[in-house]
Length: 187
Ligand SMILES: [Mg+2]
Image (cartoon, rainbow, N blue to C red):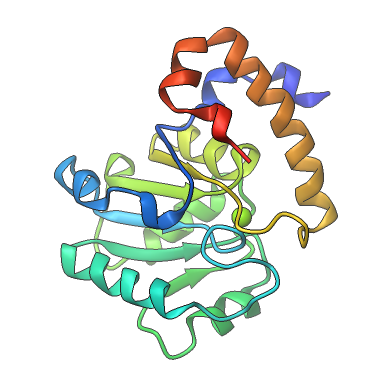
């Protein structure tokens, strides 16, 4: 299995929270983060939905007021991103091909300002895609629990199986970090 050849450290997120709303964005801002690249599926909405909730829209507006730029970055088709962002003043990128870095580079070019990788946070629900690319990109990485697992596509289900093995490796190799991050609460 390919994950055995990958460096365990690259899969450890900087933070882990139950969901997007539990993230302390003020703290991120104070630590110099200015660009938020957030995943869409199972991070902001489940596969069963296509439009953002009011709570997400007001959160995005709050983040903008705080001084962040928010860009939605997803491996899903671009049409899903445009439906999600319809009528909203936010940018998005589909076919991002995470864990490759190509989409992240594109998102940085898409941003209104020039941001350093170190000013960027990548938020997502998947260790094998979102966190792995964030760490290699030298961005700040935040893992959240998936909103609804049962509607996931086959390739995401495969990533989840690999993730379970990776979590075991993190627990064995970096037990202190595993506990600090409360990764036992990973769903
Ligand atoms: Mg996702």
